[in-house]
Amino acid sequence: MDIYRTVVTSAIFVVLIVVLDLYTWQAIKVVVDNPHYLQYAKRVHFGLSAIIVVMLILFIFVPQLAQYKTFKTYFYAITVGIYMSKLLVVFFLLIDDFIRLIRWVFQKIFYSQSIDEIGGGEDLGRLTFLSQMALLLGGGLFALLTKGMIKGVYDYRVHTTKLKLPNLPVEFKGLKIVQVSDIHSGSWQNEHKVQQGIEMIKQQQADVIFFTGDLVNNTASEVEPWMNLLSEIKAPMGVFSILGNHDYGDYVSWNSPEEKQSNLNTLKDAHHKLGWKLLLNEHTYLQRGDAKIGLVGVENWGLGKRWPKYGNIKKAMEGMDDVPVKILLSHDPSHWEGQVTKDHKDIDLMLAGHTHGMQFGVEWGDFRWSPSRWAYKQWADLYSQNEQYLYVNRGFGFLGYPGRVGILPEITVIELV
Image (cartoon, rainbow, N blue to C red; front, side, top):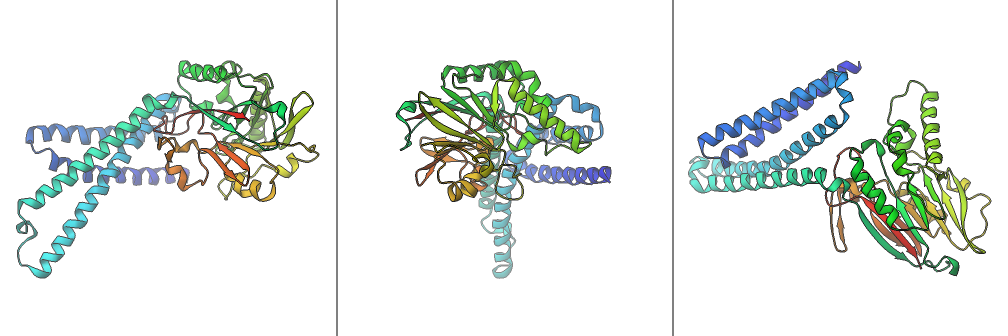
């Protein structure tokens, strides 16, 4: 049954590729009017598609190719980039087809001439303009996605925020928090670049560091090659961590529940080996002199059926002392409006990650946009509601698409004042 489903899915995907290729070829034929160059364009266009189809078939039916992880990752990323760009081309061609259909209907009703006789060469010029725009924008999108893989993926940025908490004890004034989230160590390929990111974290000279989930993509073994590097992340008041949705192994087919649990136990042990204090629906305190503030860490909790709800904030806060300030570490930002602002108004600050800003968008001054906003009301940076604050980290690593466009990997620095 699995093989049958795979074959059917693959066949549908190949048909879609062929349809997109034939449709985008219409734009190329209009723009490239030199017959000699058109032949070269035809060979490149359909030759590349043939290579992609053959490789997709090989990846599906030759399991041994799975060991070439880096090549496979970038092959899929480039393939998706190519066909996302072609979809953009098709969008403009559909607009052109709609205009031509309207004109054809109009002439059928009111005129006896063919549509080509209405306006003559002017119609061809308009088609050329739309085709040129389609290819230009499609090529521009592919160029952006390619640049995101070459440069953006490890282009770490420090985002600094000063946050005023009304009840903050004077002893904690100036406390420097560094937040790191969504490491996704199973996606990393470039040790030198990752080392540079770790050095940037260390340069912030944080008093305390919080890691808000997704250490791996799927399995605990992914973090093993990076343990030495990650163990360099330290702070005087400690490093505190939580689990994200990818840390539980929910997206892997396990042979048994015991195997899945063993993987999770291994991952939890990795946190301890790194010297990080993993908070599993529990709380602790940060102390300076006689003053202290509360730190609550919950397991993953997300709104909707798609995301697991392992987090139990009520349990995590049981027996908690009456402290003037409480900070919550919770991976999924939807937890904030789902529970925190409704039922836990004594939480002053929640730190989350999870969204990655979809690794694609625009940030220009105070303006931020990403497709992520269609899925999450709070998806990057600082939000507030009735003196409660939420900060959503853009993620340190990446998942799926091995790149970032506009929404770059983040190291968050929060100074309490």
